[in-house]
Length: 112
Length: 113
Image 1 (cartoon, rainbow over the protein chains, first blue to last red):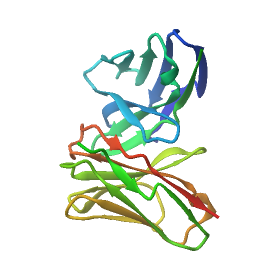
Image 2: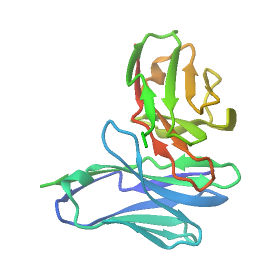
Image 3: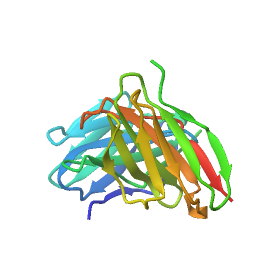
Image 4: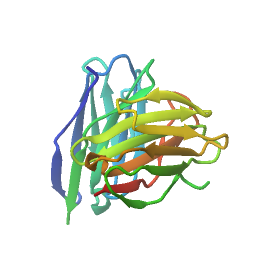
């Protein structure tokens, strides 16, 4: 069964600290993996998208990694800001079916 | 370029009624996908339209249907509403290629009483 699991479910960190969010998937065949940020009451916004051959990709203070062998990805946020408070959703595209499979998300709260 | 727009933003209906939601994609985008988001289930894929044809479909009952017009605008219809249909309905547009980034609209918040 195609699944995307994220951990932790929620996370509280202090402003300025770093954090890492995890994503494990069992989607096959794999096409690409995306990380989205969703602010409360808004639609998700794409942060990164990685294909099978890419190990790491950065977008400002966000760095995503992908290990296609272990089917794991992580999103590292550096020097967190209050505006980073949001849900972070890991999404895997299943090749052939062209269907996106969503993780449940990690709810991040950055406190001053 | 204007982003993805969805109308209405908020909607309140009663059980048994039907509802139509609208999505206008980014200019030039030919793919529109619809998603349902609930606190308990997260984001779930409903269907995708590309060039007026349904290209992919999720695991939702037939009460959920959609269509896409020649200008790529899309509508989603839910008939015989149930309480469990209360959710945020998001649409996302992309140029249409498999690796293309999807751009989401703000969503329509549907409440079924």
